[in-house]
Length: 356
Ligand code: PMP
Image 1 (cartoon, rainbow, N blue to C red):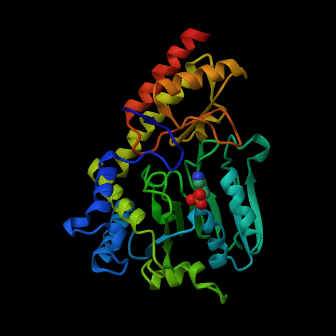
Image 2: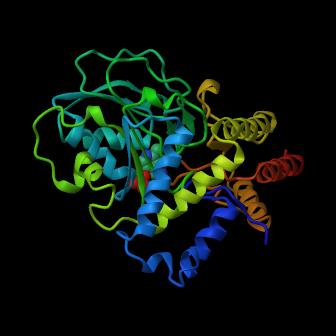
Image 3: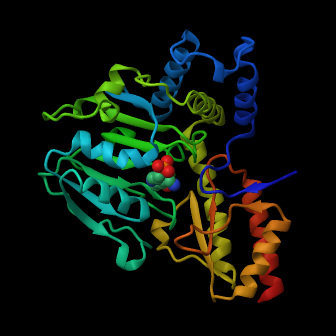
């Protein structure tokens, strides 16, 4: 059965990745054992960590100044792990949406937070470029893609302050100069793998700058010393991320994926802009290429029910907007085929013809 999966996360993964990871659960590398039955300290698993680390560095063009960690606790844990490790006195944050707001809330437990821009009074529909980072900040934190509302930062500030970025919903979707970031974190369940693992990419020289007692699991340095196996990691998610990274290289890397993602997003935004029944509320220059939010122009429960019914009948899943926002959201991550976007557009066209 063909299903068009627009879920925001956990979300669509490449079919070949799913096949290989499923196979590894039954019989890992012809060992007669499941991946889930081997020690996380075995040579076989250490090889997976090593290979996944190399792939991240190669694909993102990062050198050995960076450590790659595979942690648990989601991006949510990073909201406090970042200030625990990096905040001495104060840090600057951009408040660009629900998750950025949560990151700020946690950071305030560790010191002073300076919010340089908040999109809250405009319902987070745009991201300002006009902010200035004061020079006495321990770090600057931003969210590259705001999964719920569907905005994306297209440029990042040039600054000598360490830049920390939550890339949970657009990591590996476009080519960037990743060396402009001192720390990147991303939970895996969108563009990388199954839920339960967070990739942290950290420039080692920003750590240990001031004296602080940090609980072991919260301490990046301890994870680096322990090669991500301080405790038992999420072996399945790490293995699956290795397969996804291999898939990305086989697709031709980030430039190719970026082109495909831009193309898919443009098709869908063009349709929303043309369609008399739907609208997108995001400022054009901030529209996300990963999460496309849209609403019926006029609130009409009957129409809403009709559209939901058609989507269900056509096996279009995961299109409901976030519980805080309502409306619709098409998450069009790397692994979502172009064909699914084209299919959704056809359905929107037919819907318009019938009801406008
Ligand atoms: N940041 C962003 C941008 C997200 O989209 C999400 C999850 N959707 C989170 C943080 C929280 O991630 P987790 O549930 O893995 O903690």
